[in-house]
Image (cartoon, rainbow, N blue to C red):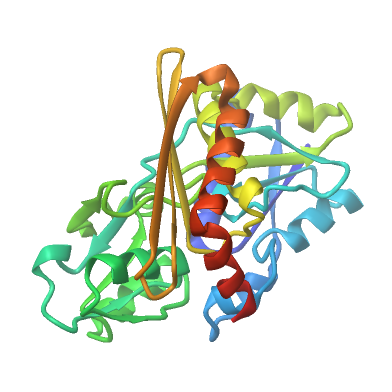
Length: 300
C-alpha cells in the first residue's frame, strides 16, 4: 500500500484523490494522509509578505524524507524550483486549464474603484497595470472560503485559478477567463506535481506512469524562467509555455507591485531545448529591469 500525503483543503484532497484513483487503476492500493503546512496555518497575512519558499510543501516533503508517506500531490505552482536533496518530481500529469479567472464580473466592466480580492502579488500587480483605479485587496482562505466572501459582498470580484474551479465543478462561477496577454499565469499553474523519494523505489516507479510528456516540457520551460530569476512562488512573475508539435512558445512577465513597470518577453524554439529557452528568457528579463523590481520586492 502506498501512502499519499496531501494538504487538507477541498481542492488539495480532490487532487490527491484523483491521483489515488489513477494509481488504483494500475492495481495499486493507496491511502491518504492529511498534512498541515505553514501556508495553511498563516491565514491573516498576504503570502507575498511571509517571505519563505515552500509555504505549502515543506512539511509534506519532510514526511516524504522521513518515510511516513510514499508520495505527495501538490499544485505545481506551489513548488519551489529546487527540491530538497533526495526528492524528485516523479510525474507531472496532463495540465488542466492554466488561465486565471475573474469571478463577479468582467474586468473591463468593473466599476471605478471596485474592490477585487486576490492573495497573489502576481495577480495584484498585473491588475494594477491594467486597471490602476481598482482597489486590490488581500483575500486568504481556500476556494470555498473565498467564494463565500465574494457572495457575502466583501469584494466586488475575485481572481482565482481556473483549474481549481474546474476540478471542483465550479466553472459556472467564472465570469471571465483572462488571456495570457491580459494576465500571464503563474509558473506551472493548472499542473499537478507528484513528488516521491528519488530512490528508484516502488512509489517512484509506479508514479512515473502518470507522466504527461507535453506538460512536463511546458512547465520545465516555465520553471527555468523562475529559477533564473531566483523567484519563489509568491513574487510578481508569470510564465506560460505552449507546445505546437516540436516547437515551444514561451512568454514571461515581471511587474512591479504597483503595476507601473511591466517587462514582457517572449521566445520560441525546439521543445527539446525547453530548459535553456526558459533560462535565457529569465536572464533577459533580469537584464531589462527585472532585477530592480525583484530587489524592491525582496527588500520590502
